[in-house]
Length: 248
Length: 272
Image (cartoon, rainbow over all chains, first blue to last red; front, side, top):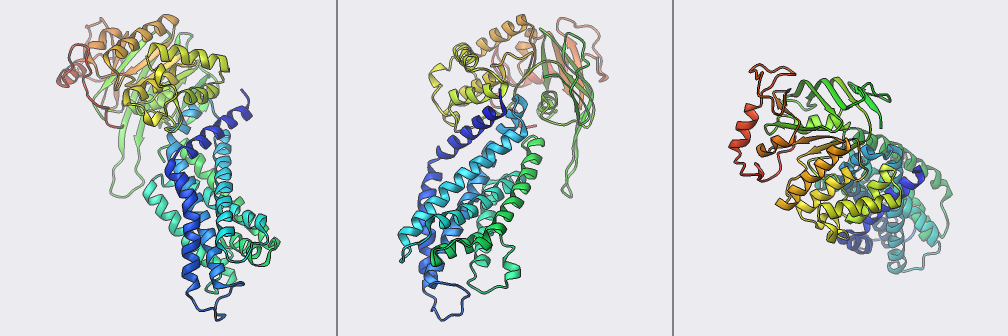
């Protein structure tokens, strides 16, 4: 039995588990639109007198911030729940013949699929809810998908070392919120600080795509760098919990 | 799968004799706590056990005595601190808590674990047909695991351990939640496996089953006490690896209220 065959079987099992949770699907559809509207309306109440270090109207940047937050938080929670629900069964699969690398690949692929779906839903929500037409929807989707994948991997890390649904979810949502506020540029925090926020560069990519209609190539490499860093962290965390019998 | 392990090292060769499918010698295991003000728990202290081909071995002991820990070490799921574990041949492991994917159906579970075992599609279909028939859960094949009753979930759990026809079966209270007919079917299946030369180790609480075992080990204070069934001589009050001390097990299980062939405990044993 080939590695490819086993990995595909693992991805198929994870994807089936993902789509068979009705609450997840409802959350997937509702949360991005809700978050975009709340952030947009909330930020739209601020007077646009040029105190914010943003391009575009404050309401539009608020909606972008809502989209990035919803994508990151949702993908993170999906990554977390995937880890929690599968950690014992994953360990059993390794006893039955799966290799660790095959399971890691399956987990990553599921995060990638979930991030793409969440990013797509958030992009469509932005298209519907932002007043002006979005001039670069593919670049918008790319930025959101990177934000989702980054937090999806962070969900794997949290799920591996803190396999608790309530505490893990709270941690991820709070992290995504704080990270997103830093990343948004709304409060003009020094770049040297904000560039380390995982959502900073995806946020910049989405903002440029929505407001300027261009792909912010200077932010692409750092965003992918963050993604690579979280990939390494998640491999280490996942391997640790797998070797500890799923009881980490 | 030929594996021998010492401490936390797993080697790729087996040193067992031809008939031994798993051998544990002087195994030690302590759960260390990394948190302050919590104590470490010594679970196994020189536990020794052997299972031969075609042998059905019972492992008994009080709740929290370390039976599931021992089973996890035999299966290779848990590391041990000292001692040596040698395994020969393929292993089927049925944990106390079903480690399955809740949102997969029964059929999908067979497919996934069959793939893990390296079985062909036809072999998976045959194994599924055999086990769903023997354990009588054919009509639940399209149900998700999370929607099954505890007993049916346990049937899937057991089937996953059996489907590749392993050389060694490690079963941790495999019949939790079984009805009487399934319980009998399980033992018929075990006899069939014994006849095929499969070595079977079962954690059990049921006194009436003792005659079904070739050997019973009682786990007490980290030590395993061995008794050949039908051999009532040589009982010793001092715990040594080869001593026989099954009275405690008998009295423990009698206190638990086992009826004729009924389970001594209504629910599952506390997690160890």
